[in-house]
Image (cartoon, rainbow, N blue to C red; front, top):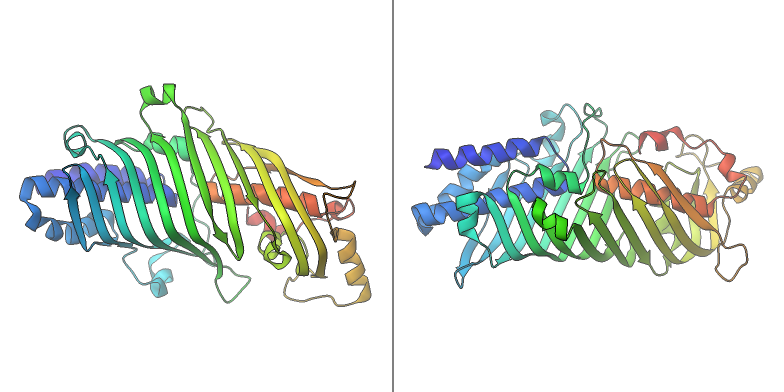
Length: 393
């Protein structure tokens, strides 16, 4: 019986390897863990679960998987505590194990709770049903070393297509992510130290997660509501509406944030404009985007004032300090953009998707085009953008 369990789930993980984006890896990993736990519980008894999960799961998933405990509550509610899912080699040995750059993962979750979890349906029909799934206090670290070559091109479908590729039928009315932190580290040839993007105090609610074709005819929209702190910018609020029945993965994204120090904009502008912001205040930002598998359009309202910056040469590590350089910088970017002014500029989002990159890269790069459009002068828009920026799309 153990061999049957492994072979069935191996088919699922092999399907997962064809669609490597992080979010789907995590869904598949959790699904397989839950499947094996439930099967082990009912087939072998509670005392065998830890033995099966710690060794068999790690071998099956090619990840180091552990958890402290689990408990069925009131029959069909399941809680798993202290789950850990880590790439099975130290981050320091990254280059020893990889020919191309890829994600190194460390996922630690204090508690996962499934309410109204239909485990019999999962065992008998490979159909995952739960009224809600709560992921409480997740600490997620992702590392990628881009000093290694790019992997061969592999198309990465967006979320609607990704859910359709999961062999297990999936139905979750509501998924909650609470009090979680996501840290993305990326090492590039342009710096000795890995850059970091930190999503802190993150909360998200997802409604209508399903790949059931009949259900999607009646309710095709997956809604994701998010809020959190990003790189020192507090209380970013965002909503994504994803049409899971769309043939071209259509979705909309809206996001907004209140005031923050303008220096935090440097991460958005890095590699795209030849400037570094040194002073200024962003009074607010609002993003409205419509997109699909191929391209994104929309607007960015970016209100700011008191902008000061340094101009960089082609080598972004060497500053041009001359009077002419500073004058050129002022000609590239407006020092203010206030709604009280008649000439308030709304940036235009226009971006063609790079289909071997993740949906998060897509959101980020599309938003970047609108931010740059709102900040640049007409003269600045004639500048040839840094070639590295094009390669980083």
